[in-house]
Image (cartoon, rainbow, N blue to C red; front, side, top):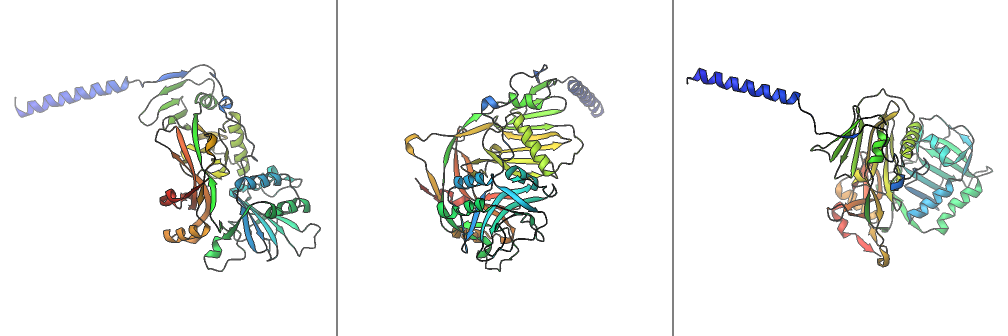
Length: 452
């Protein structure tokens, strides 16, 4: 056989092989199982699996309350005390609303309570927190701190003024002011004398630079070591079926399949629900792009809470983490013992994204956590580094002070033995830069002192 004949034979074989492949592709049917062609099967909520409903008020709580008293700063040693006083604050009535106030002028003798929230909040949530019988300013206005100032030189009927502040604004950080009754304010400031407090200092004071008197976004650190409880957590599975029934219309023909990238996939013509990470994580997407709908931050928040409540989606204690009205996205973070869980957030964060008034994306864990009963072993805790040690670590790591958004104690969630049956919840220091939380003493966590 000469060379030209051989080329022709090879070409014919390749063409035939190509035709066979094309025919196979045309006739290929994915290995789908039909998950449902009729109306909803089973439950559409997670109530029987421990899921609950929450209000906007339940999901908003300050991460810190700092008191300025006789020139020094104090905060609660126990996060539960902070939660308790915040619960009493919810009974306040704010009167004499001023929606164009000047920033507070805090004198050396003035007493101040500073309530610090973890993210910017729409001003309208003040109506959920307090009793306010007057109109609030524009809905797109935000705040992140509340200052209660006792002006000792005031000649007003009540010398206590509440300032609602957006500390990220340099020009006019005060968004609103109001008067507070002397009874309510006296109860607040009496906390300094009746509760266990830890002395605090401001990060900016340590820097050695002159503190801008108009700055209200101070980061506070404890002067001494502080202890926080550890936990050992076990898990319960969050069932997929109620979530599937909630997210897909009753008339959908839902097919299920397996792929290399997910444990199981449920989908109809326009929706896809992926079960991942050994069935511990859920990612839902509505694959048809909807027309954007402008919502205020408050509308976005209340819509997300309503949708979560509709299927009893709160399977642990969650609190608001962030509202991004530009992306129409809301996220909630899991808390234990009053502290956020900043690591392994795939298992501790819920996020919802909207388009056209409907859920476009919904990501959440498919496990709930509950603490192991220690019985006679007692509760254990870890003694964390003092503020001075935090400062030393910041210097060692070369952080630019101006780029630090926040410093907080939070929890890491660590799998005990890679079997995902039990997790350790360990407190440690976290630093936030460029919107991201990172452990500050990650390499030293094993050296933290455990106390009973």
